[in-house]
Length: 158
Image (cartoon, rainbow, N blue to C red; front, top):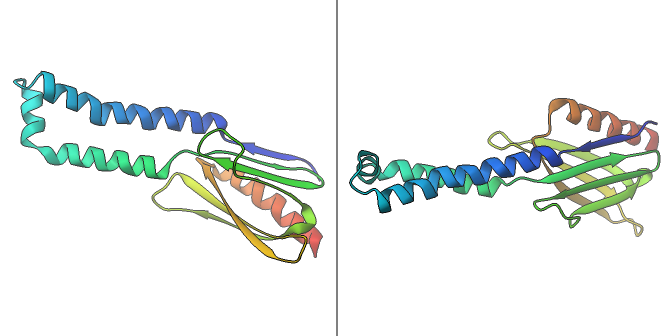
């Protein structure tokens, strides 16, 4: 079996830059315009139409809620290693042998850029555990590769 390594560090970094840039554009710049250029036409427009600011702030809250996840899946001949975290730390990590994998499910939410990977595995004392991992901006090619590798592992486990 070949090795598989799928990671999204650069995509997650760019997504974080987008989210914080949108925060600057949608909240701080209009606030500065309203406070310091209150007699300008743009400030008057924003004051007279507060629903625009409310919409932009709501959109920003939604972007923060979705978040950006630094993720990595590494599968070799013996081990499945999966990691996912909002910050680039190793706090949500799974490291299991192939024979511990019992099932998996990959779900793409409709209004999200995050793909959720559910891994169901068995622990040493025959307890089943399901872990959830988020992957930001996972493309279809990477998703198909992960599905192919996990299907092969499940087929070999039978």
